Length: 568
Image 1: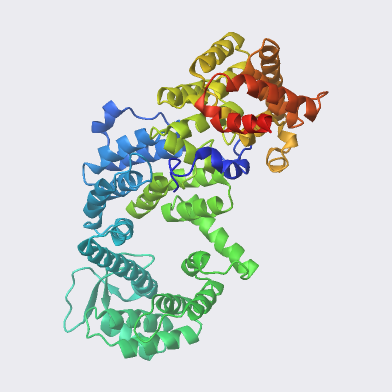
Image 2: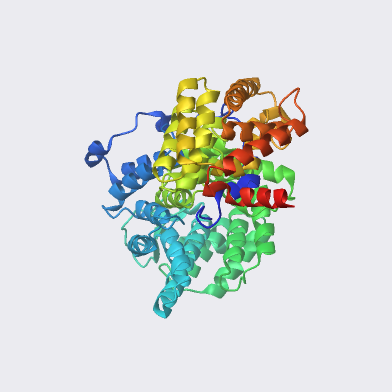
């Protein structure tokens, strides 16, 4: 993230430009649980750590409540104090966010706590933060945490493979805890359909001798893990290959996963992993189909891709948190932010700690979709809520103009006033224009008087922003498509601009040099009908001469240039 203190917010006009669309109604409603009343902080003691985390995510994503990073942090902190790892990850990510209130040491403390609980997201983020330290001990610590994160991820991937290998193992199950005469037993075996099975290894061996490919695959799992029998990797690989080559889909899926991870005789090979997983999916293995979502190239077989997507959507419809999160990321990548929010909201309700940790990091980084906000709007708001005066001015503009959010006069005024209170006098002029545009002439007049008293002329420099403010939506080619068909948005802008031009014209005629300068600038941009560019330039130059007599540092450069021109 870039800090507006080091990269002026106004200089990022080109980044704002692509996201200035007036708000359009979302096509997907937020998840039902996210629409229930939001709990109060006073009621936090009655909620579980998970539920407090969920409230924090709702504030972070504007899910059924106005987005507010500070409230999100408060709820994450209430959850984190009970040692809930996903909340520690979320709070740490927010503390590490680049801003004037950045707290990397505090973030590291939280991440260490979650990392010690084997939270992979915490371990990875901790490694990232510590790796840039000037302290050699912390750099070494970063390597340790990264290795642990990779080891846990690898074990999780292998666990998926062995569970898949155990598909159909129920036929060789014996009662849990049984110790039969001379029988070797594999215990605590999980399959895709059952948990904590106890398997008769001798019966599996006899089925292998009879040519049963399911037995070969289950037996390979027992041999590979050494569960109830001496581990024999070579024989496990042999049986897996035989079953996979015979077309047994679970064995093909296992091979695909082992090639993906790089286990034993199966050196890491993404191409081989994809081919075996595709064969398993084509053979009807739904678990392999789900795995393909992240493995198929973008130009992969469209039919298989559609099947994989349908499988993922089916899992999401059954409230599978991981599937909901994956669909959220898919929509986010397609810039379908409201739809992504709907999926992420449900993922937060039904997901496990892994899902909540990922969502917490996403919110902390500022890349999560936020209800009724464009990506740029979210970035500016997060800085503004961290007391950055330039971002507060910019947020006032976003709300006033309806850029990336619904127009909101009250919110706009509040953020302009916050910026002014923080010493950013440049916010006084756009505040006056917002009041004029909403028909509050007396308040706009007062703001203009305040501006003249403070000699706060800095906003006059921002010609790119001024042009965007006075262009009708249809005239801005970069955003026409984003607003196509939105007549309400166009009508709002036309009415606002008409009132603002009338306000500037009235005060220009009354001799106010700021109004004359700004009105002349807009005319010189060709945005006022029946007035020529030359008229505008002349009006602006005359106004500048008056402004230069007021000895404001805001226009020192322009006044010096004008003086040089007169001297010549």
